[in-house]
Length: 287
Image (cartoon, rainbow, N blue to C red; front, side):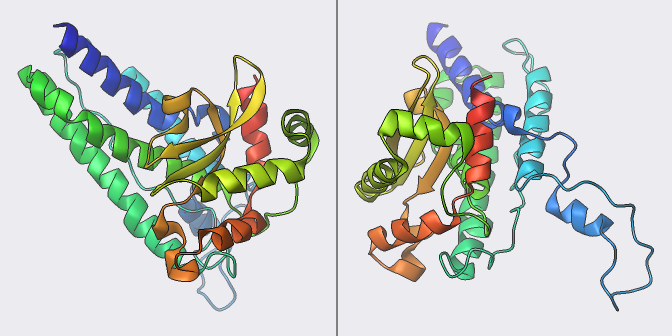
């Protein structure tokens, strides 16, 4: 029974992590890019449909975050006592807040398309499969299967979490340096922005095999920290740090363009870092 309770709590925590760490960063009035396109005025020559009323445009990535926060709220209501199983909402691939070619020349369109529509989609699909198998094992009281599914839940759940953050950390209007409280915190904790950039770059380049380089916030110490995570291990679940900025250093994130020269990819990605998004995350996690 003790093993069963541990496995159950682990799975619930992992499922919650997919959503709840994003909840504070959501403009819940936002809609997906597809929804915004469908309600936007028709382009010249595109047809005779009447233009929809204008709506305020959310910050880049807000729609994606909102979808996950809303799902998180729904999931929270579905947590049931052991043995009482109810339907759950499946995870879905979030829309990108920009086109696949928008980050060129720094990250080309082919990489973005494969990375989002194939790699991230695979994490989402495999996470849904693993959760369904876990649900069945839980109903049967099959502790062995529940325990054996933990690696798949961690890997695919982490991949879903990490990439959902990653897409919003990037922007065609990115680059430069952060401003305001985030910049002051970087100077306080790293000495200067240049020193921070150098340290996170070196950390990310030095990841052995596949993984991520992160800037995170330590709530207990009230300070920024950098950390590396192997494979798709989620930052918060691994280190306790709240994720602010993630750099994917899996080869699928850069190999088609930069081959085996990871340092060139790291040099390029700073040109598309969405500091507005990172700053919003920093402000939210301090509340």
